[in-house]
Length: 111
Image (cartoon, rainbow, N blue to C red; front, top):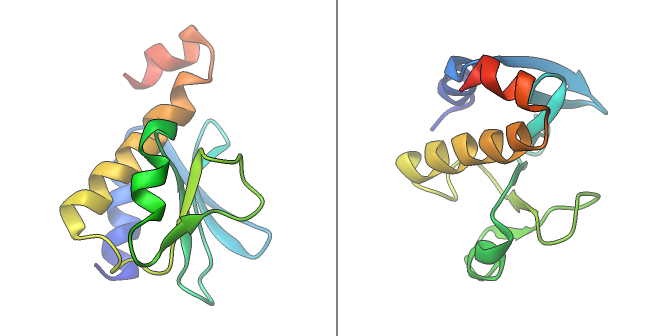
């Protein structure tokens, strides 16, 4: 998947906004990041299910995300590390994990 297709997909998720933070492209819901990507390196980080963390980081091109909550965020070396359907699914899941941390009133706007 190329960066424009990836960007279009992220922005298609209800309530998603984009912005730049720390020289990284971020996709957010209610200003809470669910994808952060280095445009320079092509590396991206997403929130994951802690129960799947060990299985995910055992895969080539996947590791614990730097500076993020331990065992809750993974980093992918590039958009090509996962096949497109899985990447989309994991991005949507990351958004859901972040959304669940927000108030019930906010969650109702986006479910």
